Picture (tube, rainbow, N blue to C red):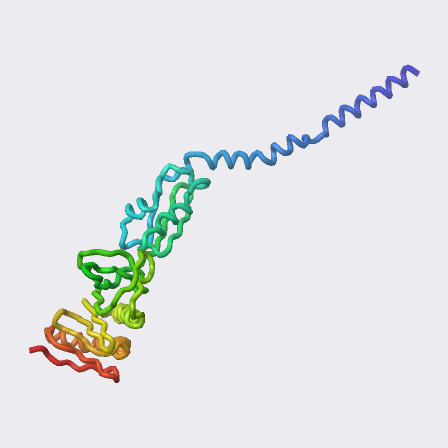
Length: 259
C-alpha cells in the first residue's frame, strides 16, 4: 500500500508540474501587452518631434506671411497634435475684413499651414474727404483719406457703413450697377480710373481725358461683346488719349475726339 500511495502522489505532482508549464499569461499581463504600444505611442506624441517649428501661409497677396502670422497670434513651440490652436487662429484672422475665409491644417511632424482667401480691393467710393475701399461685392474693407490706386466710384450716396459688411447706399440700384461695371471691367480685362454713376447715364474714364458714356446696360453689353475694348485698343494704337466714346443702345460705340 505505501508503494501505491507513492505512485499516486508522484502522478499528482506531475500533473501540477504540467499545468504550471502550459499556463498562459494572466489578464493583467495581457492588458499590459495590448496597451503597451498605445501607451508608447501616446508618450511619443508628446516628444519634441511634434513641436511646431514652422508656420506656412498660403493664398495671401494683400498681407505678407509675417502679417498673417502676427494677426493670427500663431506661435511656434506648441504641440502640433494636442494644441494646434486651429480655432483661435481662424477667429483672429476673420476679424480682418480683408479675410474672407481661413483654413488651418497640420503637416506632420511640426508644420502648421494657414491658408487664407482674401477679399480683393477693386473700388473706392468717394465719402466726403475719405474713400471707402470695397471688394467686388461692395464689402467695406477699410477707410482712407489717401486716394487709392483702384477705380474711384462717384455718384453713390452712402447711407451706412460697417467694416466687413456691404456698404449701404441710398439708391441700391445705382450702387449695384456700379458693382456690375466693376466686375465686368475685371472680367473684360479693362480698367477705368473712375466711374461716375448718374441716374440715367454712366461716365467711365479710361484716362482723365478719355471717357466712355452710356447707360449701365449699354456699357455692360459693349464690354461683354468686347466692342469697347476694341475701340480703346484702336485709339491706343493711334496714340489718341483724349475724347469721348459714346455707347449706343445697340451696343456699338462711336468716338468723338476732344480738340
